[in-house]
Structures are given as structure tokens and as C-alpha cells.
Image (cartoon, rainbow, N blue to C red; front, side, top):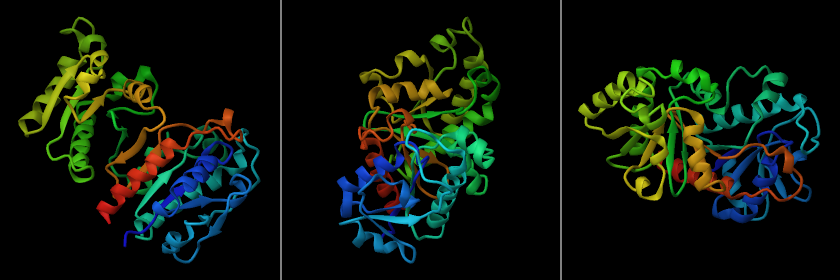
Length: 323
């Protein structure tokens, strides 16, 4: 039997605990998962049962209570007000979840949103984000971030860096690794036998033959030609402003974009409530809802759990395939 999924709590002052409780209430025993965090931070009146010996107990517990693997935090929480003193607990929950998956006690990890600035101040967090920290925990794995929904899959070649650094960070080796990792993961994890990959240009109109930038001609096209010669089905570089309408999306399985917002704006526009973040290239399965901590609505009981549910469902699908 496939081990259960674990879900790290994220920043407890945000909507992570709320959407976890709502996801459990909708999924229950149909998709049991174990929440990693301090039970004090769950919404009031959330039924929970602690699980410390065997995570397999989650299957029976989930029918009537949220299974919780307790992670002690320094303080209670004030919703909407992140507390640096709780940063170490947030990091501990992520690390513990990865350890449980890598040891075979869990099949996948779903991570709730974190506030990176809080972790940097309160826990000396040295990583730009979740993705990079998970790669560190996996021994320095070479990873890429994919955002996926029913309508679109996107992968940014550069992630959490300022826009004015993208052109320098975008090297031929980085782009080739990004496309290769994505191609392999689509086949091995997502069951796409012959992935069709479309690649965006960096500049407006994909450079327009060098009149609006040279990277398409000097960097992107040679990488794509090399990968096509290896048998990959790749189109591009294409103007990013024409890649995401309905007809265009039918022509590819994934879009490779050159920077963070070029990838995330279209998928969040199309599927804001159900997009899922998947880290490709890890030795284990990790998904995450495609939204932030939402401190501004924490505690108001209006947070939508749809993205968390979608992330748990995809984690269960991928975890069962890799178990």
C-alpha cells in the first residue's frame, strides 16, 4: 500500500493551516495526508489526532480527524502577523517532511506557502525559496519549478532573481538543463511519452531578428537546435505574447519561459485557484499550492482550498507512481 502524503504547515500566520483543514474536510479518507506543524496553529475546533509512531495510521484517522505529526513552535500565532520566532518551526516542518518521504514513510510532500523574508530573519534561511531549499535537502539536486493546471504547464528557466539579472543568469547550459530536466520528468513522472515543448523568447517579439535583442539568435536558438538534433520535439523561440491563447496551448505539453513572471502570469490568469507547483529533478515528489501566505485574509475563513486540494491530488498521483 502506498504510504500517505505529508503536508508541511508553511507560515502559521498565513492561510496554510486554514486551507489544510478545509482540504482535509473535503478529502478525508479519500486522500489521507499527514499535516506537519504545531496543532495550536490549526483553526479552532479542527478535529485532529497526533501521529508519531506510524504514518500508515493516517488512513484510518483521516475519516474523522486530521492526522497531525506535531512539530513544536516557539509561540502561539496571531493570524495575519508573521512572527520571526516561529521561523525555525516552519523550516523544521519542511525538513521533517522531506526526511519522511526520503525514508519511505511518506510517498510525497505537499508544502504550504512560506514567507521567505520571515525565514531569513528568524532562521537564517539562506535560500531564495522553497525550490532551492528542497534541492539543498536532496543533496544539491539540479531542479526546475513547474506550474501545472488542467489548462497549462509552464517552467521558468530562471526563478527567484530580479528582472535586471535575468539576461546574465540565462546561460546556454542553464537553459539546456532546464529543458532536459523538464523533458525527462514529463515522460517519467507525468506519463507524456513524446513531450512537445514550446520555448519563449526573452525579448519582445522573440527579438524580431535581432532588432529587439540578441539572446534569441545568440543563445536560445543554438540550444534548441542542439536538443532537436537529439530527438526532442521543440518549437521556438516564440514571442511570449502569442503563446498562451487557447489555440496555441493545444500545440504543446509544456511552455519553457525565460523568467518568473513570464511563466506565472499566464497560468495564474488562467487557473489562479487550481494551479500547482511541482519541483522537477528531485529524488522525491514535491507539490505545492500556487499561491502565497495571504496574510491579509488569514483568519477570515474565506481562503479557497482548491489549489491545496489540487496539489494534494497531484502529489498522490505522482507519489503512487514512484512508490
